[in-house]
Image (tube, rainbow, N blue to C red; front, side, top):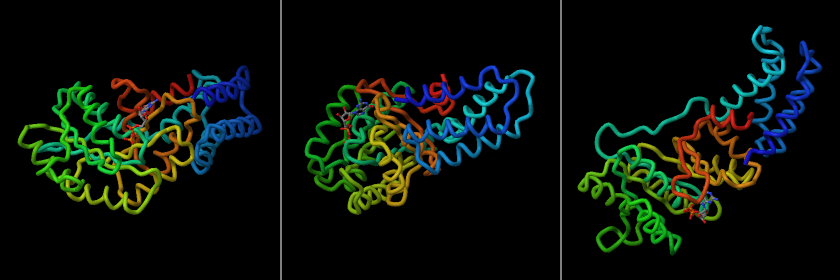
Length: 298
Ligand code: GDP
């Protein structure tokens, strides 16, 4: 997804190679190139401004280090600033101290929530957890069935609406699922909620009602990295409407420019916690800002 950005940055650094010392003009020219590379990759403007400002300031003030030549020094600064806009440290899941850990997924329809729910369940199983999936997306006719199919693929039970489980009432289903998880000794409950094609008040209200009913330990906002600048506006809308603790980027395997997705952590102040990059159930892992930065600068 970040091939073009990688290439553009590599070209920028190439022009610094062999320089003994960087003049202010060199630094300005490099900063301009980095700015263009980030904007072309779709990184949000405020993030670009902050990023380029920080790189420039640090490049000017940098002590001349014996170990690194000027080009390497700039790469090091860019790397550190990339890690910083991507959220800094890897943020791990927080598990409940007692009772099942409840993870609530929110996001637009088509963001990849249902797929991600199953991927996360499989990942948790690999961490020796006993997860249960909960189908609270009762808007899309096929969503419950899709979660059941995905649940079967990863061998994780799905709690779905049926008489007694609050048919047609996502809040009721969510509430009942926590009781069921306790009874069946599941230690993590993953609640899939309904999405819409666009942000709307009812969607937000429903997600908030479910949140209030199940008191999740983690609310994760799921966003399709391929939707470009809309990723940032959607992330802000969900932050205001529902609130969340972390972000999950999906479809990182796509060939879109991806920079908007890279801006979400910086714009919302919420860390990207997981990255999902493909149709396979194992194409999923914790998001490591430092590894992502290295990949971009590779
Ligand atoms: P939901 O509406 O948010 O529940 O989204 P779905 O889980 O149904 O996903 C929407 C579409 O995106 C489906 O066709 C998925 O197979 C596809 N999808 C989900 N995650 C990924 C991913 O990481 N990479 C790719 N290429 N496709 C994905």
